[in-house]
Image (cartoon, rainbow, N blue to C red; front, side, top):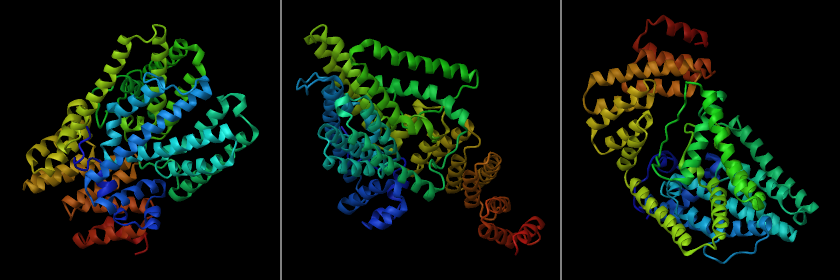
Length: 520
């Protein structure tokens, strides 16, 4: 059901089309450009080498990865059943491992990770994570170091595909902690040191390379990040259980009315849900505990680290594995009391067919940029980003008047959303609307001032530079850029903008004084 030839979408522009390093198979260059996504970018380079910039070639790779992950998922949870539930591998089609693997394969929630080419980071991270756990389970069962070495190598590969691999250590620790005592031999416990050293090295290298282990280029105060999580986790559970009204961008909901009360009510609902699953099948409480732990351990990076979005379908790709298995385990055990009648089997089969149908529909949404963002505007009308991105898609098709309308809608929702002002200015310039260009440039200066006051230096710089793109002789933009660069210690950049400003306004005293202060 995947639209193989659908164009590159969304972040594909900056992840695949823009970077020069994926045009070569120079491993050293690819590594140092972004060592934390090295294997991901290497697969993109391999795609380019084999099929050029054909979206079909990139997308087929994603599909194959998803199929491999589904197979690995099935065998992994079959093995975990044997360890935690003392059940032999069940060849029955209606076994929890088989049904959950099918749900994992068919759920429309997976479309964003597979059809969206940049979503490969989740697929690749999952592939290596599943392999790590398979080899580690073999090591536990046979206590043979032969299996430990590839487990550590695949753990490193998961880390080099996406940062989510950084939580693998906690999953391995969890497996050892709750496995039957016969699996907790001394050498197996000591094997944790290998993984611990690997992850410590990774985080130390990341700290030294980026200057901040959790650097994402986005900031949100801790209080708001925590309060968002009530809505975020309810949304995640709803998407897993009822994957309808999916959207490429979900609005970040924050209630200004009694936010703490709302947060605690939502968290209480989640806790009650967790206790319900333990009550439903108490004899399998160890497996239920593992599944919930799997879900939240793998989702932890998105809970802890502030990102522009709070919820995204692709972030649930790996966490969903444990959740889907748990749901199917509860269903299968519940229906066993009725000997899993034909009616029950038909009902489960219909649910899986419905998931397939929803996936087909969701894939058609990803068919073009316009269809993707038109759908997003319909489902997230309160988000300035959806209108801005819809406007960009319309602009690419030459529908500039419609694009301008969407950019105006975006800034009416958030007057400080600078990307929409920048795009509005560019569209106005193409339409010959000089007044629109000047309005956008002035608004970008205001956005820059707003971001600067908030301490959002990166966003302020982008806003001022966007204003300069529209009005190249903007003294205000040059002066503000010089001030920011002086503030962050980049005196060469400050000097460059001040000299450019003085070429336009030689008598500008403020610029002269600033230039004198940096020794010019």
